[in-house]
Image (spheres, rainbow, N blue to C red):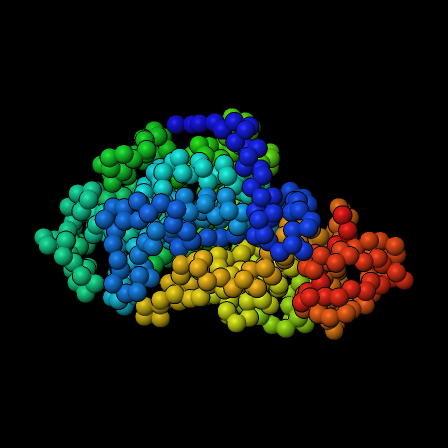
Length: 561
């Protein structure tokens, strides 16, 4: 059911970032100049990625949906209780406004497989808490919340100028787990499957049974099961990690997959004459049309044909325009739908994926370079700014920590956050990097699991968090950081300028500056100009091409308001 919120609610929500600042959630120096977007979102994306299940628990009543239980190995692989209501609560607290972020990327909230599969070397029960094992693209997963809770999340985010991005996967459904197979009566399980353990799990599934056709069906996926095609030998048709591969390359019209035909409460309906690609595009874009989702982070991009991603972008762009037309009070602006993609090992260069519907591609390169000294980081800044300033406009999304790779060294997070939040292009902040969240359990050394520990709300590193807030709010005000020409101006302390010629925006930054300093600013700020250090809040006047200020650990110079 579509609902509409009136101007009164929107006006109240608009006050939330300001109230958060007044309540002291950000450092006074950083909040003295309010966060104000310097350009459209696509020109300066500051994306916060939260693994929803591990972030904040706003509704404890949904924690054990579908009978999901503990994993038997430090709880690394099961649901922890984080949900949409928890994210909304943190929005209302002003947490994201305080960090200057303008987009919230959340793990896929649609319904996942209900049971578990064997994780590690038969060491833990692995549930789909991360959102990458879909069962029903048309329904919210009960662990994530309700339609009303999703609407509340998006309304609250939009009122603060924060976009909401869904993680989506078009490459594969979830595994054929015992719990889901039993619940939907796919007759391929041996008697006693209810007692399956980590050691004998696969022995209870009859992988030679042609009744597997009652699962997704051979028209829908390549699965290497009786009656199904084997996975192919190329990126587009292979089975990734033994997951079934959606046949998005096939133009053949299909009916609903059998498992959804038999699933009570599914919103999936037959679409005559529609291919697998068409169904997936319809299901995913409907979240945009119904709720106003602003963009997608697309998983396993290199394993799905470019035409499929173009179709998703086109359908979602039309869906968001339709939603905005019907919800003028709830939209942020009239910017189009936005997509970023994960193609493993993609670097900062422009690629063919930017022509396949992607506004941005995730940059795997930066994580490995951000830990170097400022000489090394500056070389990356120059390279990135040079690449982004050439030819057709494109963007990247850099990060220092990831749920798919590793966490940035915890002892070096101050440097890592500075390197990231001052980088050219778009940036993605992984939950807890700003507060010193520590790694979690890693059964069998599974480092992916230990990147996904619970958010450290009870023991944040307050000094680190204050540092991240100052940097994030500064970045939110300055298009030059994302799109400007980069020039190194000093060695000790390391000093650079970033100037965007088109908008005139300009900044001068010394990320590790401390003490009394006199810095040459000729070519950045003119004599007589009033400048402000966004890190300390101190102001100064440019005289004889220089400015003198005392720095408190960093210097973030901008024109004084």
